[in-house]
Amino acid sequence: MRLTRTSVYWHSFIHPIFQNRPLYLASTDQGLCRITWPTESLETLRTWVKKQIPDATLIESKKPLNAVIAQLEEYFAGNRESFTLPYDLFGTSFQTSVWNALAQIPYGETRSYSDIANTVGNPKAVRAVGTANGANPIPIVIPCHRVIGKSTALTGFRGGLKVKEELLQLEGFHDYTKKGHARFQF
Image 1 (tube, rainbow, N blue to C red):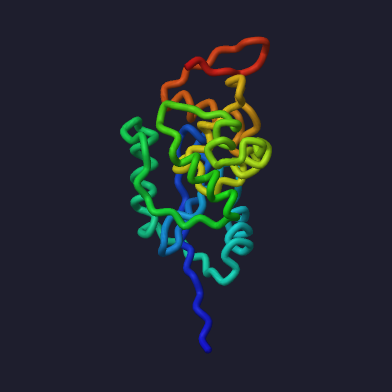
Image 2: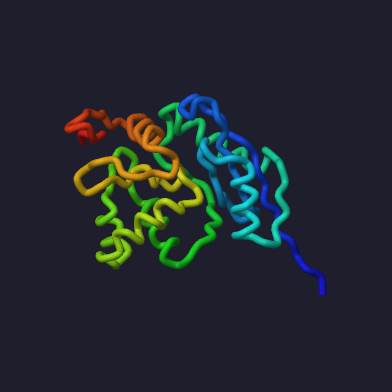
């Protein structure tokens, strides 16, 4: 019997919003499976692939990611409000339900962790939603940055609160400070 191996194609994406530090993009033949944050390294991607897709071969190739790169460039230029890319998500059924709920948050809008918990039919799972949100494998495309605290406070974010703030501002939110906490006016 011959074992089949999955190819995971990767390439870097650099944008000034991330102080010109790379995001690493990865895709299987089925679709986009991972985007790292600028605080994460290529080794982060390698470790994730090894854990999530143990039989995969990691191949550096820009061509399979051209559509992802083009849509990210359009988003950062202010010319794209939603992504039309196939995904290949690796996670639990709960995580996947949260990520699908995140993907439904429209550009220019936010939801609270409680809102997402209600959307996935488990209103008491607010902390679990936060954990799944933090494990989102394709941030920006699945807009985990649009999830904020119930009080509209910015809360923990794997990509860093400054990045979350910049992504929200890119989408038209204006920040102000109240009692030393970053908040957004809607």
